Image (spheres, helix red, strand yellow):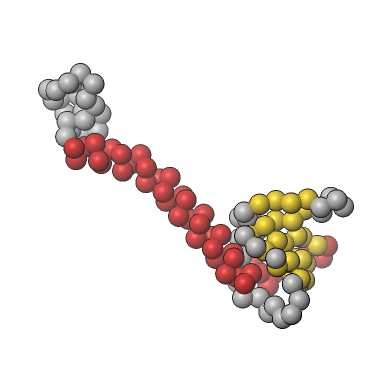
Length: 114
Ligand SMILES: [Zn+2]
């Protein structure tokens, strides 16, 4: 039989796919890591987005209107969000955990805190 990781021929049960435990582990890691990486990257972006929204100049109010560029310069990623909501006027809101934002005319962003 041939090890599906290193290609080495080995003897053993016909259902064995790897010559050794280390080939099994290495193969499993290779298969898993790209997914883990992308999950970590997306988590990091979402957490950063959340942190940026948390540190906006919130006072007593739970809504803000800011220029889009102000969020961009803080490193906000507009294409990563945790949910989507459309209100009865057809206005889309993008959730980032307990925050929601929506594009307004003139490159302004409407942000709500829950
Ligand atoms: Zn092997």
